[in-house]
Length: 521
Ligand code: B12
Ligand code: SF4
Image 1 (cartoon, protein in one colour):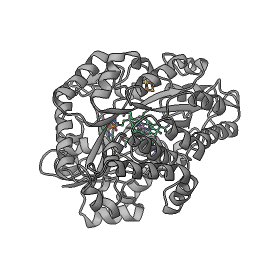
Image 2 (image 1 turned 60 degrees about the vertical axis):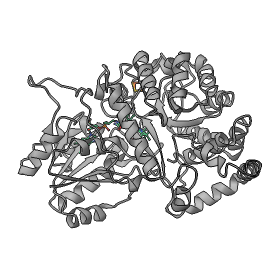
Image 3 (image 1 turned 180 degrees about the vertical axis):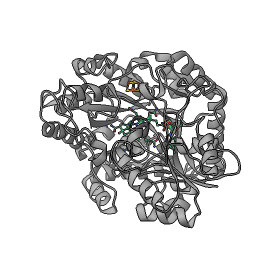
């Protein structure tokens, strides 16, 4: 049977990174089937396009995975596929919580023939076998022999065959410069950010987050050996095709068990498996100097920190009191001292937020080392404690907000400001943090570092700006380049001067500029 695994586009940004679930399920598919992957962010498709694809490619089963924000698109695509007679199985965090919606059991239309609840590592082979026999069940739940909810152990993690998978759709290097760049230094013909997990689960239970409910509060880890081998495979692939890779450790809290993280990082270093990597780590765990040393030595370049708010009352409200705003600056300095920078994520519209929250947050950010701030709105995702609290309080203004997804729009009323005021605060956060002046300041703040760091922060910031401001077409990029022309001219001049000063090393900038794991959003 030919199986298509499809992830819908998020409708806002191009994907800088493919989704891990597709590669994982591909690796877990029993022999005898062929699995095709399409990520809508890399290969945009509409309903007619996917219906044509499944017919022409003789696809016998389609698996669709989606977060809440893409679910409306996922349902439309599923409807189009089912209309041409091909069964659809859906999985992922949204349908796990809203299985009745996907199966049309709550009064709405049916979108999926089957739903895989929770982690599907163990149910997927059964789903494939049932689909082949034409006997798909409605629901596949990961349960043990006693019918109890069971979480897959990651000790027997499958080897994802990165050396063989067709990754053409995930190359971030534009086609027109690919051939030229392939010849630069160690080769830049391809640049891919690859998702990898080293563990699952998070005990912290922040109120707005799906993770503790979905993956559980006890953490399961892969063996160090399996992670190291995967890194080595990816490294070898990049080398063999004259390209580069960076890895995004998608663990929700990569250092949740500091002892184990240190041991993994030591093993990576010992095996020479370092690649440039990004990971999510909460600020409280970055107090450990030795951990930060190992992060830097093992290739860590960017750390995503869910700071959420600079107001301790807000943090306590969402059960994230372990974040201490008073230590944010010190944590970022500690990272920057090792040339590791941070993606700092903030949520506005929290219950203690008032008008002016953006300016107050920006004022703090300006005192920190250069990084990549991002601003979102508190969003009640299905089945989270936040959703339940707001629902009980009658505060949800759009209880089924996912049925009509609107980027950066609240679905409930904050306590101390209006929805419109919260939207204006987010806009202000993005507009100020990514203004040409802020871009220039970020570049300038790294003036004592090699040029590559300045180029990287600039490119990463240009791309991150696109999370909020639509900049998908060439025209919007041209406008952006024009607005930032002074910084660009400065960097080009400096690059030219460096190149002329170091004739024996023809392309030093390219070598240095690969400092960031985050290429484009
Ligand atoms: C990596 C990641 C991202 C990446 C993008 C995704 C990517 N390219 O990988 C980035 C950093 C960009 C990102 C951004 C956001 N993310 Co995110 N992200 C994650 C993260 C940390 C890991 C995802 C992952 O690969 N997990 C590991 C795989 C193995 O798990 P999985 O995807 O769930 O797949 C398993 C099962 O769900 C199931 N399954 C999944 N799909 C399918 C399909 C089929 C057919 C079947 C059978 C089974 C199946 O089987 C898999 C194996 O067991 C998760 C948290 C988490 N730990 O999962 C959040 C998470 C998915 N993100 C979340 C959110 C909310 C966001 C944002 C909206 C945050 C924001 N406010 O801006 C943005 C939106 C992004 C966008 N523009 O679309 C939520 C989604 C909750 C929900 N109900 O939708 C999660 C769960 C975290 C949370 N805080 O609750 N994210
Ligand atoms: S620490 Fe991160 S992953 Fe864990 S519950 Fe909080 S927000 Fe979710």
